Image 1 (tube, rainbow, N blue to C red):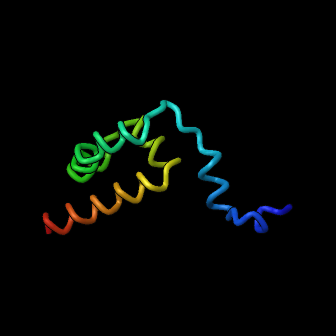
Image 2: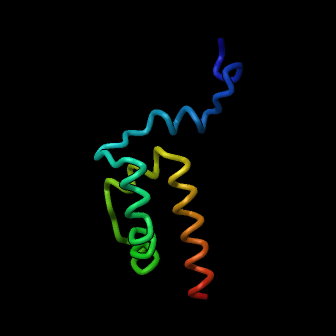
Length: 77
C-alpha cells in the first residue's frame, strides 16, 4: 500500500520522523508554552531545545504555540 493510499502526506511523514529529543510531553509543553512564546516574542533568538524539538514533532502543540504567538502579537501591536 502506498503512502497516499494510507492518507499520509510527505509533511505528515516528515513530522513523524522528526527527532524529538530532548523529550518533552504535551502536558509539559502546555504548562510551559505561555512563557516560551512570550520569551520568543521578546527575544527571537531565545532557544529552548526541548520545546523546539517538541513543537517540530507535535502539530497540535505547534498550532497552539502559533495561535498564542498571533494573539500576543496582536495585543502588542
